[in-house]
Length: 284
Image (cartoon, rainbow, N blue to C red; front, side):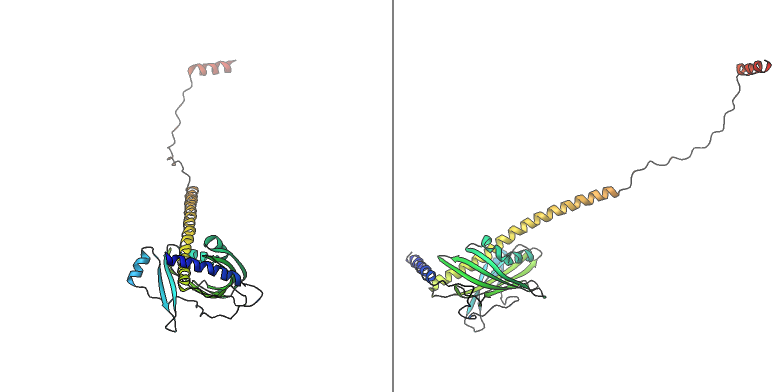
């Protein structure tokens, strides 16, 4: 209990500290051109144990620490299997302007620049306003997205000043079937002021956990709607096909009857009374 109380007091102190030094601005450059090593487009270098694979198959997410090139620094990576096609998952990740609706703690996003290269790669620059625990931040982020690689990396826009000291991150979506993917997410953030280790660890792990959770939830929601839409289209297509088949069916015709043989004329005998009348007419 004492540890929790101390943590809360630390967060309150940090709130006052950050409120006093907030200086995010889109008219001046950041304090530096970047301190953290940026992620690269491409699949992650990560090996999963049998136990981790079993957890993922059971619907759990896992967190793994990846050793960096210097052999000392580590970065946390969240991994989660999502039951949705890759295009739907990536569409949720890249719908940055909808983050405030999808992500708890994201108060606002505004894209101020967007470019698409001939190769298909996209560059998107966005202003974020978020809150984490008792802290509020404004920062500017550059996202680089390669649809062919199913990967997006991001880092601060160093041409603008952010409340964060630095931040880099990574998304990768690996298809496992027509409607199943393995999603990898990692993000490292440095705050401008000193933060107690337990507070920073709490914020980092909570952010990683929350991120894979919202992607899973939003992707499944959209996929269920898409399946319902496709089901209706399939039903309509079947009805149209049945109607077309009925229209193309040949009309029923009566069978042609065989030609009957001709009947010879019957001999007709003139009645006697008619013959007599004829004779009388002639005599007159």
